[in-house]
Image (tube, rainbow, N blue to C red; front, top):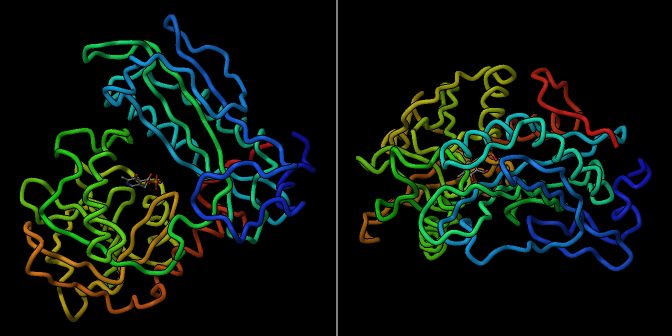
Length: 370
Ligand code: PLP
């Protein structure tokens, strides 16, 4: 892919960055295909990666991924810089988390070098689709691993397909940094305490459809899970970590066995600590702590975080009992119709680092040579 092709779909006006949200698109007429990278594990070995423009997989109907959910996925993004470079954000960490997911659910591990090489190739192949600097867009990459060999009974897969596809995206939530409400109740759990919560496995996500629907019915954007033993401690939502910012400048985020380790949360915590002077605590966070109404222990802002949305301020948590009654609302005073000042600052630093505008003091970005 030549350098001049970088962002060409947008330069030529075939797509508009302002119209991007977090959604699958088809290449418009006159645009190049969207390519994906595929690599198979067969006969005990990883095969050579292949570049494909087909958006279909040829699978045995008995493949383990289809029946037993033998699957994990990842999500990361590539960002255009002002001087025309393309930066991936913390791809090594995604490779490490993928390795850990494989171990947790007994799949072949994708070597970190293979993972990262395929990610870079996916960016190069889709360089025409990287949204231009300053538009708020980026190229989202979705690596995934599936068990492909036929099997009828529950058993470990021994053949796998590792695939990475890419899309230009805008904001995950159409409202962008606009705050949302969360719905919380003891009626649903996401994962078991000593279960697979630390893996980014598809099976963990299927459990979150019904609670998310329940949240929508209560006019809330997401469902906030509690620990399954006592139903007192915050876990996370179906697709993001939860962060709470206390008046005495504490950044507190739940550290439970069922929480997925978030690269965004880890990055925001570093920014909060080393740039904004917060103290960071990764620990159990009781829902009741968020109810404090005044003083230094009051939580002024809370937010969700993850690669797709980066940061979504939370203006209130709506809490009900397991029968969907006795509604109470916990508001956060510095979050209204727009983000509070701390969330805005965290977000601005993160975006600036990702796009190469602010010093990358922790070596998080990796340039993809186009
Ligand atoms: N928690 C869950 C359940 C997720 O699906 C995600 C998204 O990937 C996250 C947290 C955030 O992780 P990251 O910041 O690495 O995208």
